[in-house]
Image (cartoon, rainbow, N blue to C red):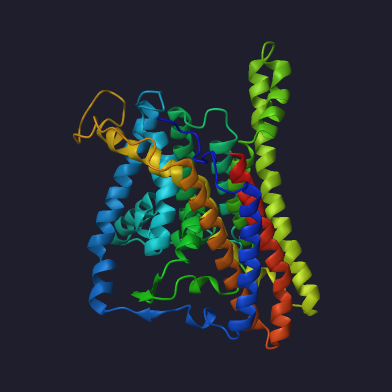
Length: 452
């Protein structure tokens, strides 16, 4: 069993790797031309709300009973994972917490969100605890009110900071799979989240400060399922992304989403590993803890630089597009949500092989979460298949996912362009820079994957 990230090496491809880069770029250019020729009016932005499904289906899915069952299970899992991290064996391969957090939770919930919508609202254990507190307080005759008003200018910056902190734990800390470190991280995140909900309200903090709620909420906008006015609605996939998003910190949050995954790929390259070795080498014998701290700082700097580069590339493309159409309108708010499908396919491309292999170990670990030799569910003897896919198949899935995600990003940005510009020529001109951005993101992503 391995907790290393699932970027599989490429072996014996039938054509040179560079042909995949060129092929991906050609697909994007052809898609751009097709969008310009065929997509002449808004098709997504006019269908963001979707159509309501039957009342019976909505009543069942949104019923209090279903919500309570899911929330009870989620709180139970949080307690179990925290207990395993805090008092279970310190071997990460025999403890449930590392596999559950980094594989089942981190990779599984985004998939559920894309398929079924904003399921995190019902699955979040922190939301469940806040709901339970409000319910008890209201039943006792007291009013549950936020302690303060959330500052509008703060926007999603707290969520971006917390997401970066999680990425730093996973990618910069020297022992991210340590159960005790994960127990501390769970306790700190729980405290911050519950404090934020108490201070500013459950919904407000969930929209702005709770990193995972914001993250999974963005992925849920890809889904054909949504909820509005107490009704489940069915819409065109990606339609909910074709809106103007003006909340401060949104670009920063999406840049962290993309940049941290991109850095994860680059940190596996020989060049980065050699750099880390050179930084640590002078202190390995005389002061190993200082060397370890310096490498952690180097990785943290890499995360910040990668996220900054993603944001700079996007904002630069928006500035060029704005100049090309000679408008005073800030196009970043119009095009920022086109990055959401790219963030999702980056996660798929980088981690789906890890999910397929390491995710299987959740079965025996659930039977013995503390590593004590138990077999509670009768699955302790389950033997996972460590090679469900060949390296070449992994590569083809990665390439296909990246190209599809960037084509979706192009389509979303194009739909926004034809929505906000009456002049079709201006709409097309605004997309030249976005095409260049998508090609840059695609080729960079493929290069990082090919280095793994």
